[in-house]
Image (cartoon, rainbow over all chains, first blue to last red; front, top):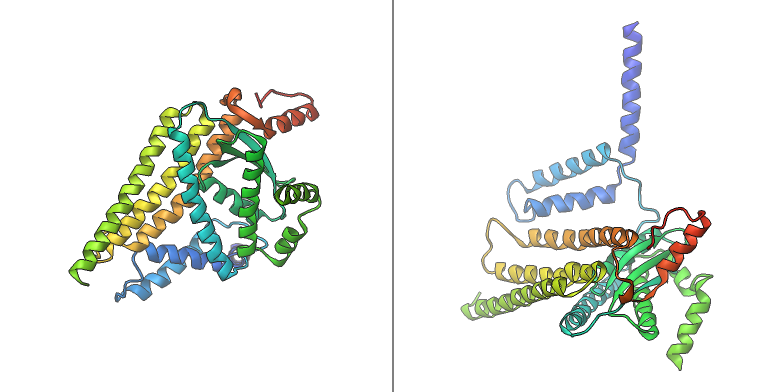
Length: 213
Length: 133
């Protein structure tokens, strides 16, 4: 009896192992290997560098077999030129906004702020997360709440008191989203951005009218 | 590398580190000065990011002529990367919990588009709980 059940058990284990191995995402594993190499200074030419690389890759695969994660769909599409522009944009925004927050900090009087609802124009998890992270890193804006089904980010903006400033803050978040979509978005995302999304059109028109006048 | 070049690099590094430290100081001042949690989150989490990045850049420049065995530029890049990726998570969770448990100063809010939203959600749910206040 034991002779017949044991191989079956083993083959079941093999099947589940194979299924888990199939879920390993090679780009993510490569990214983890890169982090590993940076941690252990694998890029300095040393005799053990190649071993480090192989070991790092094996460890990444092991981590992904033990803790499988759902894949990001659709994955990022890289547009190198726009990626550089995105990077510079975020950097410049960070410096400017740090300066503004510094001024606010030392100006006497009460500082008013607002929570503004910004509806994303693209319907992509990745774009939403990237925009939220960047908005959080840039001083002066902070994500308080996210409404995924309606793709709304609720952004707390420091020193934003009147309607004009609210609209400006909203446009800044949209600008950020546009940069991310241009740098990492799929064709559908870019198209959605161009179209502006069904609910967004009215508001966008209002802004364009405001900017034009 | 010539002696002069190293001196210039040193000065650039010193300026970067000083600017970074100044920004972190601003963050500390803001923490004391601002009245409510959400405003404080701004200074606690933000100028500090740029400050930290500047300090890291300074150290990186300083490390170019003298490659040590403890740190190298790769380590610094990792520190910067994980700081930038993790700070928003902590900031968002703190802000969300603070907002939902009412740790905010209504008189400082010029406009609050989330409160209206949460109120209407509550109404739909049958007025269960008063989380948004």
